[in-house]
Image 1 (spheres, helix red, strand yellow):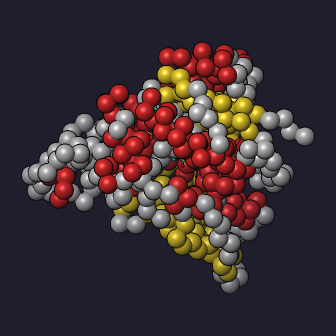
Image 2 (spheres, protein in one colour):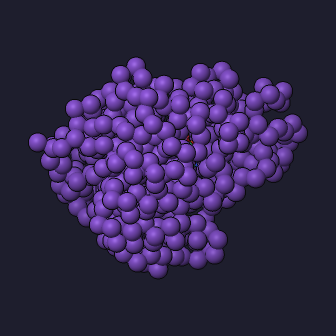
Image 3 (spheres, helix red, strand yellow):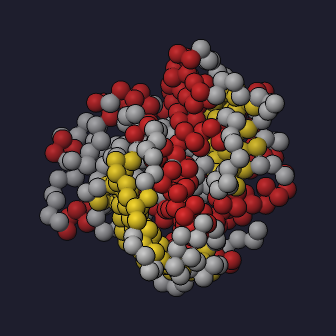
Length: 428
Ligand SMILES: NC(=O)c1ccc[n+]([C@@H]2O[C@H](COP(=O)([O-])OP(=O)(O)OC[C@H]3O[C@@H](n4cnc5c(N)ncnc54)[C@H](O)[C@@H]3O)[C@@H](O)[C@H]2O)c1
């Protein structure tokens, strides 16, 4: 029988609710949630209010400076890290040094120095670090891995991958902390970590060389001015101009956004509703990346964040045929509604084109839950009693590193105009 595990969570924002509600609602038999940690007391209190209906808590809350005290007092087996990306490494490393295993949200971290610190800490402490790549668990994404492993198109020689973030979800990265590259690594790290992980997972390989181009071409004040916009504001709340802006987020109209961010901002100055056409945005919204993999496969990848629809298209060319997949995702704003709608699938199509045979479609059963049904499977893998997984989807610190290193190399390539060798970024 598996022993019960004790979990402490640091970073009680939007994503955190996904983990803490699952533990208290669905995994009571295996898991105990024992404490919250954050810089913001209002958000920790909100988390406690959300778990109360399940008969849990109120749990002890600790400000970030008391993280170590929390570990010593509540003695968790595992720390769940769901803070702002820039701070992940601090908690991952300290938790491992204090004898805990760690579950970290993606991206594992934002640059090569912090990545190296994490890799060194894993080696030094011998603790386990998992990164929660929920997209691997979406049934259609797992199906692609199965088709490739089973040889449906032979050896994969190239992948053409396009990801569309729409004007609702994509815009959200330009309203808050992600808009500063120091916090998020930009979208090539923060968002593309999912996509580069999928390619690593699908092909069973790792990136070798990366070349990237990227720019801020739609969001930001300068771009809006070029399109003739003359009315600007810094944040939506209290602004007359924001009333005419379809990109504005009105937190007071959504109970959860109001409770988690508007009512909490007095403590830390975290403004969740900044104008996407304001000053101070230094991440790209339009990116193209080429990657050469160790398997020799070539990836061409495009990400942009102001699309009319949300989803992705990915095509695989192999020595025996081609696979095409299109997935349309539901539109959402983080913490702005039902979490099961986050990345929920509205439509999908997978077609296999064997080299000399008729094409055929692959039907993948719909499953409930966020990220195309991947979220519940991931949660069971983390907190439940998972079955043997033929596809080995549980992502390690090496997977976490390999997925961000493509984006980190891409960021360096954007800066220098040169290709970057991933092996030069960190030592494993
Ligand atoms: N896998 C997914 O599908 C998915 C979806 C959304 C978010 N995420 C990840 O979850 C993490 C959190 O994102 P979010 O959307 O919930 O953001 P958020 O802004 O809602 O929450 C971040 C939380 O971190 C706290 N925080 C900030 N600095 C801190 C510090 N120094 N110490 C402790 N706490 C600190 C904030 O107060 C806030 O409560 C990010 O790493 C993000 O990439 C993953």
